[in-house]
Amino acid sequence: MSIRTTGTIAVFGATGQQGGAVIDALLEHKASVRAMVRDPQADRAQALAARDVELAAIQTDDPASLSAALMGVEAFYFMTPEANNLEEVETEIRIGTALVDAAAGARVPHVVFSSVFGADQESGVPHHDSKRAIEEHLKTSGLKASMIRSTPFMEVLAPRLEHGEIVLRLPLPEDAVLKMISVKDVGRVAALLLLGIADSPGGAVELVGDELTGPQIAATFGAHAGLPARYEALPLSVLASDLDRAMFRQFAKMAEYPTDLAAARAIEPAIKNLAEWIRFTGWTASTNVASS
Ligand SMILES: NC(=O)c1ccc[n+]([C@@H]2O[C@H](COP(=O)([O-])OP(=O)(O)OC[C@H]3O[C@@H](n4cnc5c(N)ncnc54)[C@H](OP(=O)(O)O)[C@@H]3O)[C@@H](O)[C@H]2O)c1
Image (tube, rainbow, N blue to C red):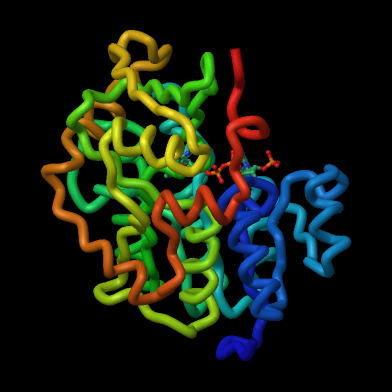
């Protein structure tokens, strides 16, 4: 496959699920990749090195290490680590800000930030508003930036096989529509933007592969498995963290946010809906579903 950008592309979060998917997609395009990792000796970092990915050791509280890792790159992808409490939300903003500042200092020609669906509005969800703050910082940095705003990942759905039936439980009302995307597709869209093969109109794209209610999600897994399926809506109190409760309250209102399912597919036409993702991953009730 041919690429437009031929220079090195730096990836932060390279050993994680999103960064890993971005690197997989970049390597499929035969791009040169520099992974920014905090421990180059870690198994996951070494696995990247074995695939001819260059490793750059960084610490997010060491600006010189970030600048060195970003020097001379053609494009830069970053996400921010998961936050489970308000202190971690502050850390998330601090890391995002440090990465943007380092990219600005290194005059990186194009930055792709993996944000979150709804980051263009104040949501009251602390670990979503943090991404909004990072987007704002990126917009004022003078850098050319593309925001990819992900919805929840299909990979986190965990239906169970119970007495010959697929059961999906989420702290979400039955009639709430959950928007979702596969992590692999996040990586594919990011790679096309990083490589300059595609553009995000207006500098941001919402990543939605599908939008389904809980009963429809359960039915999609059930149809694939050839088994009956049911959905059980759980109360928000099953969630341990205030942040997650705020997030699921927000998910319950997602239907109020219009979705353009064609927007991300205009960049990557092969983006999967849930049924396609289930088939693609080879998901089966016995291998991917905890049974009881
Ligand atoms: N789960 C979902 O459905 C969903 C949907 C949309 C958006 N998101 C957002 O996605 C983000 C998480 O992405 P992910 O799932 O790819 O994360 P992940 O799999 O947990 O990976 C985290 C990555 O960040 C690196 N990292 C963490 N803290 C670091 C630090 N202080 N300095 C340097 N590197 C650090 C980790 O490196 P090490 O290997 O060294 O630990 C790892 O590479 C969160 O912001 C979350 O809100 C999640």
